[in-house]
Length: 365
Image (cartoon, rainbow, N blue to C red):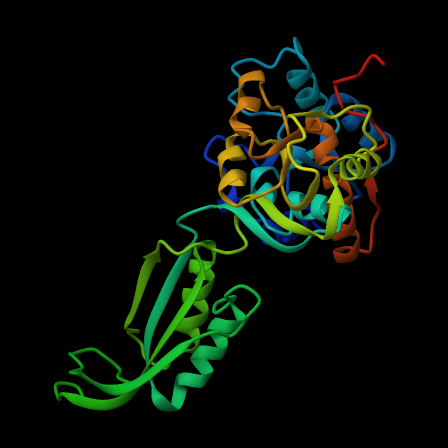
């Protein structure tokens, strides 16, 4: 198995187009054409994790956080980023980051947190825009099912939990084949009228090339008439944060004890407990203060996130409880998510969880 095969599977899980503009997800170091000898899954690709991968015979590190966010002008080993990159290159170890693209997936980082809290009726808190397109294609009636099926197989027609969604209308088309053409029906220089079906299908924008290829290969015409339309509709499963509901209302202090237990926390920073019970829970792994107003608008009783600054706690407006549980603490189960996904997908080599504690924050109790 080549490293590039693993990277392709990861990109199918969380397409790179879902990452935020400031992010640097993807292959950061290494040669993707090499055979994969093993994978280490980690939250942070530190120098210690690279040396762990070397010791365990793994040449691919899959990390949540990119080790490089901005360009490196020099690589002399003067800081932990440069030392990590040097160690990876010296030992032929590839580093792949799957960051905000995994954050922005309903079943990704936040979905894993929601699993730990047994939340149901999950929805994205703030949808990411410009991720949906519509394909409209005109096909002879007798070939419509073949073309439609090819588009479905390529990933088109999924809306929420529904698949193979399309809208189809029949009508008449006209065309005149020009010199040098090889028309499927009709004669060169003579206007042809034929019965066609218009197929309309919504699809994630990142699948455009794959869908068009599948559609044109299945289509009988040498010149295919089709339209591509960018949509402003929200993609239900893509965006920042998550909101869901507990199985039943819980006393707020009992709920905080549950969070503390499930996440192995020493401490939780929180705003005044203005509600005696909680039912609707919003959350965002990592730095999520930018979603406080979205949590308010969604009617959440409590918002669980990390890296909330002093003045941002005031944004709760005495209508919401904000609970800051720590950055590493909120995202720690991402390693489990990646490990389980890769272990199921690839069974011919080791997929391991890093044993290195990469959390740079400690608490003096």
